Image 1: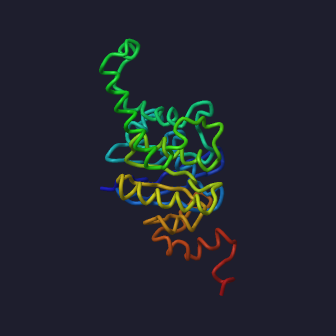
Image 2 (image 1 turned 90 degrees about the horizontal axis):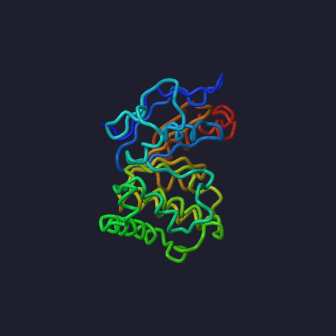
Image 3 (image 1 turned 90 degrees about the vertical axis):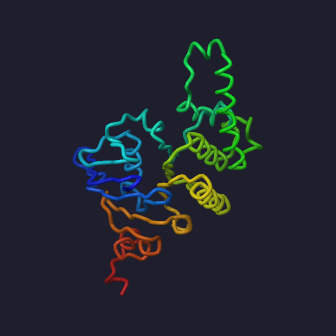
Length: 258
């Protein structure tokens, strides 16, 4: 049984079909990437998985559960975390505080016990802090732990957002253009972290990305989209060299290439 399965998923906005009868499966422990030109429907699929959008039809099963029966606020507790194209962090809070926010999903204390700051609350706070510190160490964010987000460079903010997603302890990590706006060196760091997220943390990764070098270096399988439709699926090299994918990216047909 697949870890994540989308079957015949379609989403329309008025007369525009953003996702057109899309089906694919992601196996546990793999890095699966979605690629395609702008407007292909990649981030729309992420928003469906995050339950921000309700598809017109189709089926989504995650870890044996019907994801379409869940509300957006229940997604994190199922074990799904994500990053965003546009960084979504608390600007006037520290790196540590931003990562601790992600631990809300795992809180078991109630308002009264927190107000009285009972011993059980202290133990829970300590446990959450340890989880966050492990993420900080994993991403080499020690130097930024107490710094406010507003004073950090863009590249560090991207890593902090990745850290916040990891602090949820997800089973499935949705990475929405993790290399967007990063330098070549920073993108290489992201590639190393994705490999470790998969191998060391055992987290399954579903990624949307335009940087084909990153996609090729970390992905087990790739699916290419255009105009909301699936063009090709397979290994990175197979998809990259598929005639329909080349045409979608370059506007060059196979006949023209010959």
